[in-house]
Length: 116
Image (cartoon, rainbow, N blue to C red):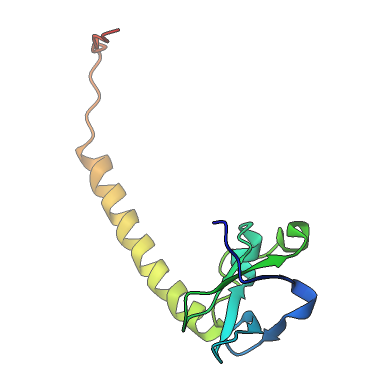
């Protein structure tokens, strides 16, 4: 991406605890937003959800490298997601157990031809 509206230092952006994003005023009246997880993933582009403008955020990626993967999601939301994730893991465990029951091991090794 070559054309940024501006380059803004992270210190000049405001932290929104409710939305869990850094924001900066956009000329259209809305605001540019970027999350901590985006910063941890070395993403430095903050977008405005109302227009096509983008800004480049100047920051030290090392400040965000220890950021938990889903820390920018609401804590109440992540609790619900964890429950769903646990249910999915249980289903995965059941599928794994089914696969083990159907597994057969033969004494003779199978030769596989590999073409060059």
